[in-house]
Image (cartoon, rainbow, N blue to C red):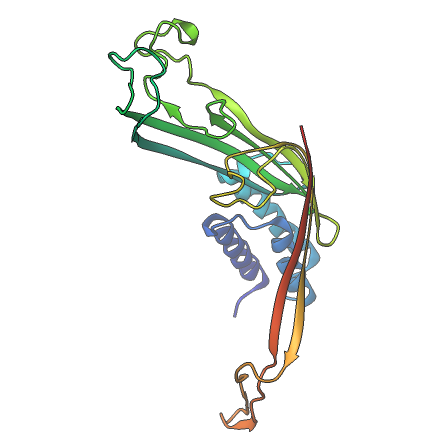
Length: 270
């Protein structure tokens, strides 16, 4: 028969293993809820529950995640980023357009062929999270100052006219810039408010609004999902079975449902 002391040790070991092996760290309130349940079931006493909480604090402090000192209101934190290496080639015929300069080496003339090839890279590193469930924030560092692209061309700053004087291994166009820095609130039903240099709040497609554009200013978004019950049968529902495995209630056809998303975006950009 398990003694209370043995049971308490098992509880500590189980919770500690859950914290260390889980894909996401076990929140303190989750462990507290489990301990409260054990106290309610009279499996452990209040004093033993407090001892277990103390053991969990020690176990958590020894893990890599436990060494992070995060503010209590912070409910979620995500570190993200991406790295890209790419080769870019562009070529085309000038047709009957006149040359931009006298035809010569490196200058296309009328009905000529012009092309360009580049090796490029991109680096983006960001941090985003939520505060007290309703507030959110984000900051992202990225290469290149171009508002539409964060790609940097290898060897593009080697000429003498480049920033810093150019030359081999120059770093005139290599740098780290603030691509995003924003905060927002989503505590009102269906509404989201965002301010700062934010991810594009508008709908992005290949034809309208590049997702790489991060506008600065304020954005207000409203979105609501309407569900309409059209009646009729939209498919068979799962029948109800007895303990013996016999169907006791004939399955009823579920009604057709139509979901409609209605949204509106408002923004004031600078």
